[in-house]
Amino acid sequence: MKVVLVEPEIPFNTGSIGRTCVALDLELILIGKLGFSLDSSSVTRSGTRYWQLVEISLYDSWDKFLLERSPLDDQLYLFEEDGSKSFYTPNYHPHAYLVFGCESKGLPKSIRESMKDRTFSLPMKNEAVKSLNLANTATAVVYQAMRDYF
Image (cartoon, rainbow, N blue to C red; front, side, top):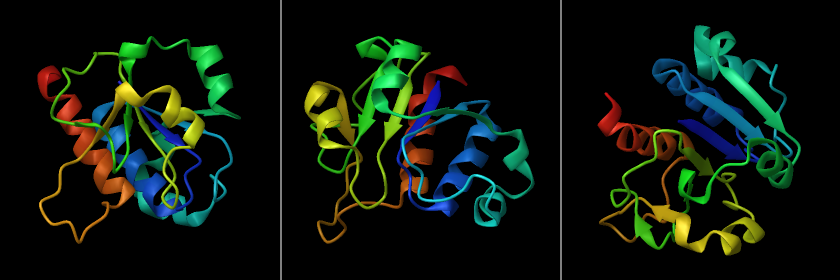
């Protein structure tokens, strides 16, 4: 499995997600313009001493990612606050790409529109909370997706 962040904005989230990737031997794929420098101290602090162990791949755009990786539709799982299905629903493909958008806007509309049937959300009981922190969401999703592979 791989974790994909599309245009992440907050270095602390990316650092924390990178640490989760190291813990679970997952690749971290970053796509598009980043809201920070990968060598910034805030990313390093969030990933603590594990940041240098993160397996990172970079792509300039979603289209380049699709072209180079050629993932099958059933390998792509997109996560949005308004996803049509719960993240508990799928049986995750062992070579899944778990895709998350930037903190302020989520995934670009063009990606969401083309993959509506592959968009999932985390259920929340209290409607006062619109969404969870990206790093928390990604960690919850990764562990749910990997439940059959431990």
